[in-house]
Amino acid sequence: MSRPTVDIETLLREAMAPIEPPERLGARVEATLQSLTELAADELESWELASMGNPRNWVRPAVAVAVGGAAGTGLAVLRWRQRGKARRARVPSPLDRAAGDVAEAVRRGVERFGNR
Image (cartoon, rainbow, N blue to C red; front, side, top):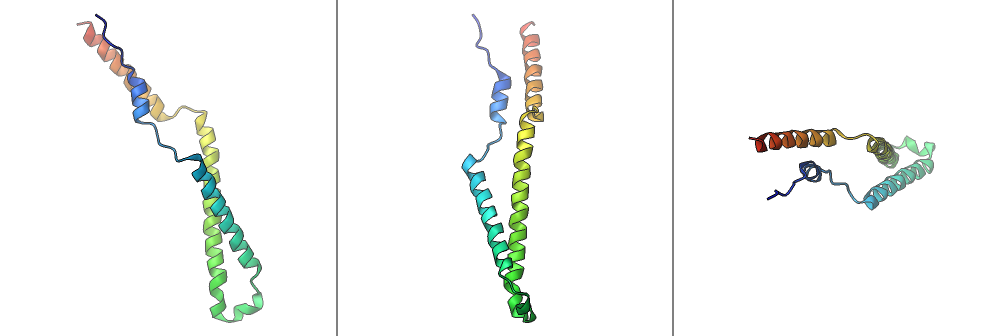
């Protein structure tokens, strides 16, 4: 009688695999951040220096700077992470190496236990 073989390494990889968001989500977030950055830039372009004498006129440019800065930073981080993902795809992750090590240790233990 032969016992069914269980591939522990595959089971561990499947159980610990990260869940990636849908591809469209990244494109939508990027498009939204790009749009916010452009709108803030347009708002700042339409700003007139002469109107800054009145403090009540400072709100719109201040909001445009804050929104544009935050959206631009978010866009830069998003693109930086996308490039990093491409680099990491070429190198095995520590999780993959750990899953392989655990599976190998279990295999050795099963073999040792089966020989007794």
